[in-house]
Length: 312
Ligand SMILES: Nc1ncnc2c1ncn2[C@@H]1O[C@H](COP(=O)(O)OP(=O)(O)OP(=O)(O)O)[C@@H](O)[C@H]1O
Image 1 (cartoon, rainbow, N blue to C red):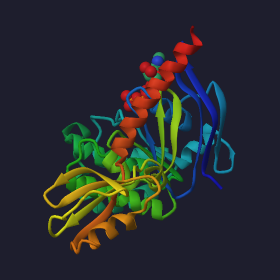
Image 2: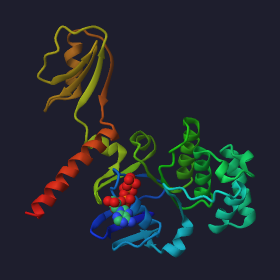
Image 3: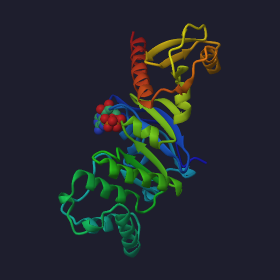
Image 4: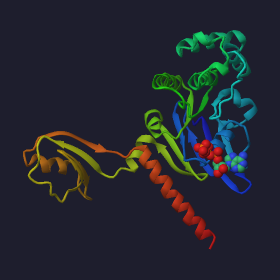
């Protein structure tokens, strides 16, 4: 059973269709990427999922029941893009205060905060004020306060912004560990390489509409262009074949597109028949970045065309 299901959600601001009939569901324990260009409607969706405001239309089901923001919010941890910490408050006190707001007792909160502070190398910060922290340090504090009460659903909006590679890795490992323990993670970012590394499933939205929904693996397969890279030990006598077209050549490494009706073995056969040694051979799948750019540009054109045809 899905942890979260959105059905035909709509949210309009005046005439702006920020979220326009979006449906998807998120399986428990998955790391789910909510992607889209600026202004696509991601924050609006996240605000409905966290009960900050109600949808104009549509239904949200959380953990098998109609979403009840007042009660269910205890099971949700949200780290918004605009960070909200009290600047003058000491870090330890602030973590304790926020944990108690999420329903933990003082002793429970203290125990968990200490464990997290050790894990994320923050022990010496207890008496510092938030205003004395760097951007990356406050990011770590905000992460801890988001996940401390072990919510079923953790929503992280650009969680790595401002973090150096060591701290980004630390947080990344903790995200994997939280998912492993059963938390469901919604991860929103513009950084596609992070999505490839972290997410199991993605939804891409643009102009308030959903334009892609699937596992990262499946989406990459759906967009593949039958491209292969082959590295040869020596120059082949011939590269002419009905089976493929060479799209790029750099020294002895060729990028090859297989022609319709042929298979990867036909490439290998072509070179083996010439007694050329094959040093490496692999399929080239599109990156999520390429798919993102292609789909967002494509769908913008399609939406514009639809809009124009509606208005003639
Ligand atoms: N309070 C508001 N009043 C009017 N329009 C709004 C409001 N908030 C957002 N919008 C509009 O709704 C659309 C979706 O905005 P939203 O903030 O959800 O996008 P986003 O995908 O989170 O963008 P970004 O990646 O830039 O944060 C945009 O066109 C935006 O201008």
